[in-house]
Image 1: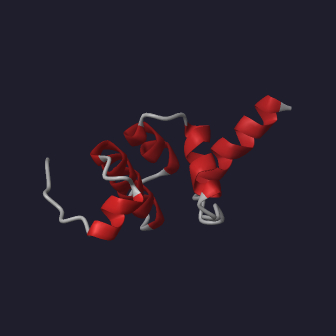
Image 2: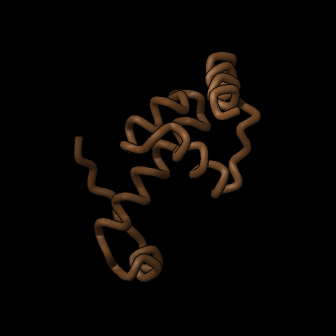
Length: 86
């Protein structure tokens, strides 16, 4: 689906009017919002953004978004990944 969304001039200026950067930022922001709203899991978000699971976690950390809202399955997955690293 394609939506036409008006972008304020100040946003265009902050991205040097590069449409692809704006598209990427909007898509990422929307997916993060869906995660925070509980509609997508961490792994679904990573898949939609075409990035590894760990990269999505790092994206959240870089934005200061805490992961204390992990559900049981996600927490188990994180624990298993940490065990594999050790």
